[in-house]
Length: 248
Image (tube, rainbow, N blue to C red; front, side, top):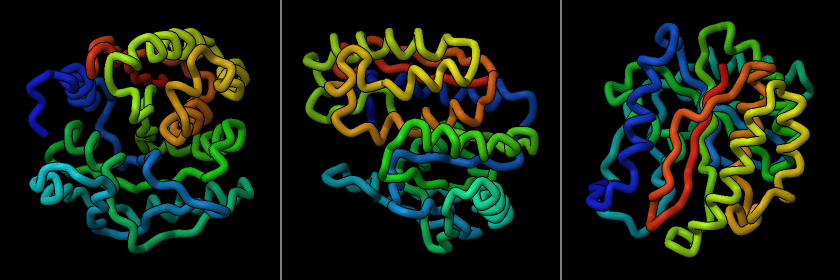
């Protein structure tokens, strides 16, 4: 959307810089989106040409005309199914699911030509940090197969606080997040992330933690690779602090 206030300038720049920062173009992308939440069994999108899921309301009319045309990858979906089943994580393939905005918005900015296949994986409604860490561990082999794993969420997600009222809580939580992800090993980070509710202003920043859960998955997939902050902004929507991280 038009962004006259410049809320997304730094984030857009960071997303556009991802492809050039990779050692090679990924064979495909596995997108773990905060906007696909399932119970009991996880779901992985298996459609060869996914459609669109406009899972938002009250936005300008043209935001419902966006079409991100990146192909799906039934082959990657099957591989994800195999890996998770081997780790006793219940999963089924969804042959109808399209790209929700947690997937197509960052992908649209990062890869506007939509040439790299993308598959979505849901998160579990239990939101359990340890469970989702184990999910990430099960996905680790994909990284050696040139699959880019992206956890799509937000480090601050309180819809009532996207204004100056969220400035101080987001800064407090972000400082904790920076310190947590600076830990050198995944087990150390896992231990701290499992207690995320004890972090400063945690429940103010995340009344529901769906947008934090993809980070748990990414941390599990990272192993002992170090984390670094590749996007940091302190002026979003009147002073919110927002950060994004990468592993390896």
